[in-house]
Image 1 (cartoon, rainbow, N blue to C red):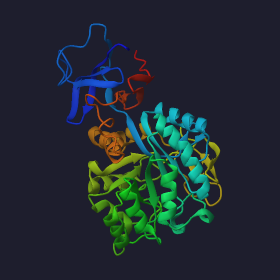
Image 2: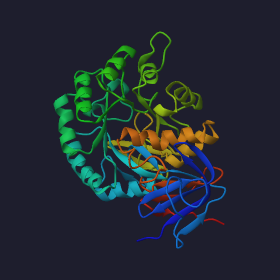
Image 3: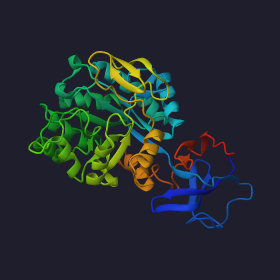
Image 4: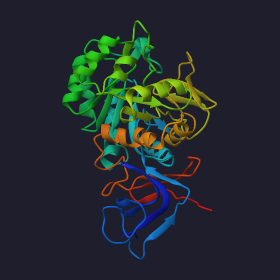
Amino acid sequence: MAPTKVLAGARVVLPTGTVDDGRVIVEGTRIAGGGPPGPGPAGVPGAAPADAETLDLSGHWVVPGFVDLHNHGGGGASFAGGTAEDVLKGVHTHRAHGTTTVVASAVTSDLDFLARHAGMLAELAQQGDIAGIHFEGPFISPCRKGAHDEELLRDPDPAEVRKLLDAAHGHARMVTLATELPGGLDSVRLLAEHGVIAAVGHTDATYEQTLQAIDAGATVATHLFNAMPPLGHRSPGPITALLEDERVTVELINDGTHLHPAALRLAFHHAGAARVAFITDAMDAAGFGDGRYMLGPMEVEVADGVARLVEGGSIAGSTLTLDRAFKRAVTVDGLPVEDVVRAISANPARLLGLDDRIGSLEPGKDADLVVLDAGFDLVGVMRWGEWVVRPELG
């Protein structure tokens, strides 16, 4: 049994707020307690064992491990079309940047390929390497296809949606749909019945059509603002419907390319911190570098960290990691740290139905956490009680 670990002296972000000079106590793979200094962790009697490993994190922050709902790869490897080894390479790349829980996102491809690929991803989900599968396409609008192959797009036939769910063997977590297309609303209902998130995205829907989708059971907006009609004062479109309905959580890509800071603040103002989920929408180049890549069947050029299709120039995912999204949210967007923690950990954990295990620093939950320095740069990552990145403190 590994010795108890005590992370002491940090600013610890708990669901109840930030504790200065706080601590987190880890026993095995779980959090045993956390809170202000004292003889024992908050709510847990007794003192830490005499042989506990104590790490002084004065001047640092300790926050829950990050949870990414929407991620296509990283480290030069693809979740959307790579082998199991490729997927693991991408997972470990993002883990080193604080994402202790990741959902693997597929992109538009041939339906039979998607089904076969889902089977492989399901095995990794069964092993605990990923938290499930997100199908972004092929059931999306050709008018808002972004970096998806238009020739492979199709209407959301519930029978075909069910085929992908079956192929995922219970590990499908989310399906992005253009719900205005024929079969869209029936597909949303099917997903809701099976406990799978129906996400509105890559859509050309009107305001009214989006409300119908929400009423049918859609609960997430796929990368809000991107790949959907802009907000208009006479034609408010899907953005307004998704922001104003309290049943919907909106994904935001906070990389400085996909969203202007004012748009991000607008979303936080109208949805509130409880209904925002930061995502990466990362592709292979995340944590790797510029160059030529494939996103499904589409060739992508990454230059200065921005990914665009070689043909047409559409933005093709991002090279974002969630530690960068966190720092930007605090230092550029001016958001409170506690709100950022909700958006990057607690809210996505809740959407995935995993908030009994992850998403906050509470006793009994997985010991998944991130250590940030005073400038919000990542210096440490722990997953299941073991250091992925051990803080190197001077």
